[in-house]
Length: 58
Image (cartoon, rainbow, N blue to C red; front, side, top):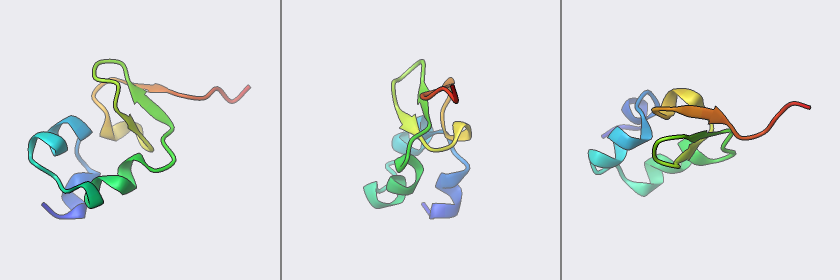
């Protein structure tokens, strides 16, 4: 699976498709969101099934 494909996927699906760890690192680096369903974290909310912002701007 190419990085381009993984960047547009939910992490759950990328992991189910046996994505390589090196390809996933860019998605989780500097995580800003966490998934309410599975607890995975990602930098962009499009990569999670039920994203919630980790940090408040306040």
